[in-house]
Amino acid sequence: AHPLPSVPVKPLLAQAPTPVPAAPASNPAPQPVTLATSALAPPPLVPGQLPKRVSLAAGDEVFLVGDSLMQGVAPHLANTLLKRYQIKSVNLSRQSTGLAYPGFFNWPQTVATTLQSQPNIRLMVVFLGPNDPWDMPESKGKPFLRFKSPEWETLYRKRIDMILGEARTHNVQVIWVGPPNMQKPRLSTAMAYLSGLYESQTQLYQQHYVSANGVLGYQADEFSYTLQNSQGKRVKTRVDDGIHFTTTGQKLIAEQVLSMIAFPGLTVTGH
Image (cartoon, rainbow, N blue to C red):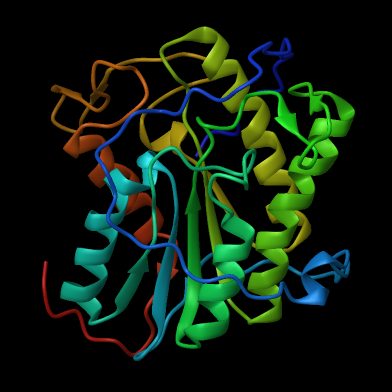
């Protein structure tokens, strides 16, 4: 995968989020629990090489976290994991969600609840971003923090850390998928900025990060609705809104994630 470039981002002046539209989700939100204290502690800087792939064994489960981008990818991931390896998934992906507005949907709390109640989860895959490049409230009744300001970035990194910290507390591996370039330049530049935050925090916690840009064939800040496949034919990977993926694009990202997972001792039973 090609790393996202470091691109200057101009603050977006919107005071309220404009959620990315998607098909309605039927997943109920888990009930709140107390976040693990260790989730908020800084990660230990332990020297050593991160394994190239995560590893799953029989009986392990996979937790799928994200917005409408993940809603498109999750069924392909879940179906393949079940058919090939008999590994079950917990798919709580939900449209219009992110980390900027926990009053609407609180992902750190949801992750804490889910990992506490479902101990078979050994891998969490996270894929979100397009709902988050907005000014956001620090807390109820307080002024909004401007997108990409130092205060905004500090708070947003903290929310990423809360998710990664919960994973560490429960000994769960993480694959964090960075959002790809978008058709609208301002949104695309914002995704590059957010992806840099996801990547740096994921690496700090010694977890796995992959950008969706590489599998879609994007270099630097370019965007295309299509990708030239191995047969030399151009196939459409993005739908007309310039944000979401076609079935082909969804499957490409799902296969990219699957390629990062090792299944030692498990027999492939399907295709």
